Image (cartoon, rainbow, N blue to C red; front, side, top):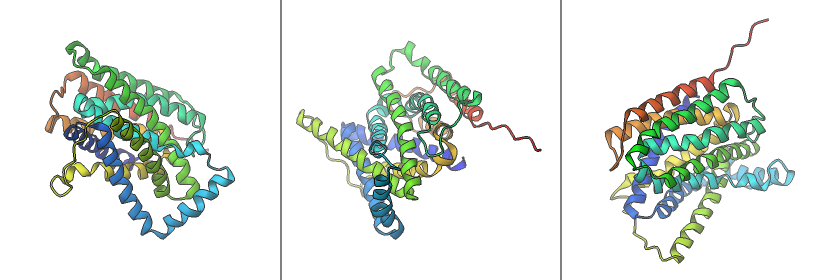
Length: 308
């Protein structure tokens, strides 16, 4: 639970990095491709130098597929990661990190509850209990409260918000299937590898379509001239590996809510200390975030078993 909470704060930083890269390039898809490519190359190096991961990738993964323990659609989790990274690069400059984060929460909470209920994650079906429902509903209410101040000011990008919500739904699916691959192969790095392959193929396809439509490209700054803009991929890799490992014991909903709590704290700090142009941190946003943290606590509650 502590790791799931901590990685959320790092993901808030990734959102700012990818959003800034997309702003610099004037191309969110190209920025997402760069982020995914850097993360994938780092992962590839880790697997090359880790003998057990090479064996799990070349032996255990094909065997799990042939035996039926894994099915083809479980290899598509990277589409969820691609949608999150693409939405970061496209919408964070418009919405700010905090509003992006609470919109992502809206998509993740309800869908995570459903994913756990049908048993898509390796931990099996998890009962839809009162505290879990209250946590999901409370988080959704918190999102509505947090964004409510933007409607009256007329600067709410509705399509951008909807895109982020959809990315949140895809993210809960991603976490569940990646955890399945991690359990089947006994290696979260293998799950991350499959994730990056699927996501990178999707993003490269989107980039090719964008190029055919005549969208101009801007070369990114060199890593040595602005290294921070190249750190989104490694941060994404850290999240994917962490999620693949911890979703099995925690479940998708609890992992997501703990991760979200960390994101909210990190996002609010970023928007206060280094805000993007047009970012507004008002009372509704702060209260909505506090309500989300309370919802996480409710969803995390597990009554003690009585001693016999």
